[in-house]
Amino acid sequence: MDVNSLFNVKGKVVLVTGGAKGIGRMISEGFVTNGAKVYISSRDAKACEKAAEELTALGKSSGGTAIALPADLQSLEACNSLAASLTARESPNGGLHILINNSGAAWGEPFDTHPDHAWTKLLTLNLQRVFTLTQLLTPLLEQGAASSSSSSSSSSSSSSLSKDPARVINIGSIDALRVPHLENYAYSASKAGLHQLTRTLAVALGPRGITVNTLACGPFPSKMMSAVLESIGDELAEANPMGRIGTPHDAAGACLFLSGRAGAFVNGATLSLDGGMHLLSKL
Image (cartoon, rainbow, N blue to C red):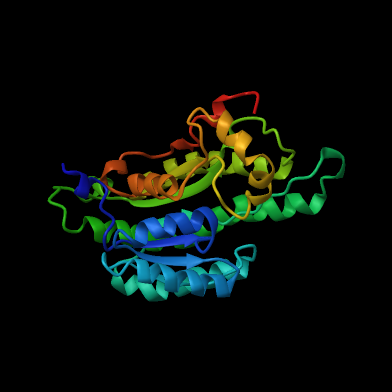
């Protein structure tokens, strides 16, 4: 029961949506530098290619690699194409072990002018497409769970799967845990829906050898948060019980925990990754 085995993800196959930038990039780096094979997907093909090249260079010592699979996940057709491409690449090799549903969008605008199309965009990308992609990739995740557990000494296949299940990690938000200070109606509602979707999927997919959990993230340095951090970043850090905002190590570490043996029995959980900020009602 050593630390290396409890958090080991070496050789795992991972898909991180939105993996070229922001929190997704932080998570991707955590997996690659610990020996995983990481597919990164976003609608920005150039950013995907650049990130894959940089991450693969970082993974040289551990054997980790990154591969770009650009896709605009707002589109059902693009989700189908991404799933088909990943299946063609990894089904012969043992499947997919970890799916990080990180792609998302935000929209901040006052109540009186909050547009209808913001709801369509955010509910589709932040919520519906998480279900879509998870549904499409479930056969590949089941294959990954079976391949990971094939060397287990367990006496039954079901208990073997439960020791090293495949993982789905949904990137949620603390704005789904509280009434946010910012007027991001469609965003906070879509993330609250995502948290509930996580719980329902955990019950549905647990018996199939797949755990599903949520990270409810607070402020991290990312393009989505850049305007807020530029204007009130110091105040946010000072108000946080931990006195800071999130770092790449925080995002990557939480995913490594949930993806390794240490997190194999965690299913349907919402892990607040915010230093305790969601507990402060004044924020």
